[in-house]
Image (cartoon, rainbow, N blue to C red; front, side, top):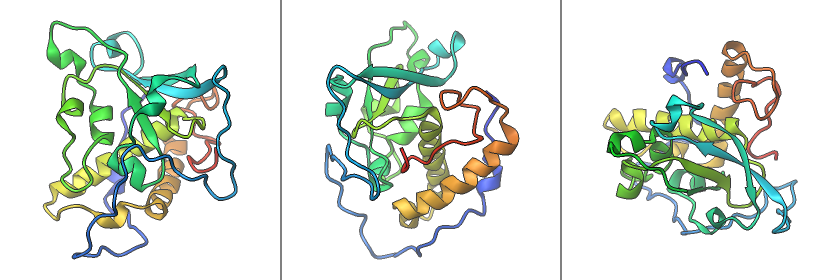
Length: 218
């Protein structure tokens, strides 16, 4: 997987204007989102499998890609976990489970992708349990709809963009904390990836962006 170039995002705009005095939307722990208009709610049986993504920590990336498609049972413990701030606000309900990764050297367990997705929308910092020593993580959608590697990457890179804005000292970029802003960003990101990624193996290939579906269209 080639390095991801973030330089093209500097001028990305959002549709809504920031409201300097408005608080962030209220976040409900362990939210179970309503179905997206035009789609039905998930009706996966416990015996069936759900498409998810495994995101590897530093030590496991020595032998395997940073992240890849996987499947998990529909009754997996991951689905009882809460949705973090940013995924909740943009209505891509990601949940996380750490199966356990061992290393004598704690930095081996760092997992920057997961740390970024778990940032607090107000402060830009991840909680301690997601900040270091995270290990390898299974990521799924709480609504049990398919999670493609591309969707995982999109939310991660959106959080990376948000953190860049925090770094400019202007505080929380509230105008980005909604579905409409993410959809606009996602469309542009997909178009850019089609020109630089050469994957040909379909939806389970993180480098095949030719016809990838929107996270809201699965």
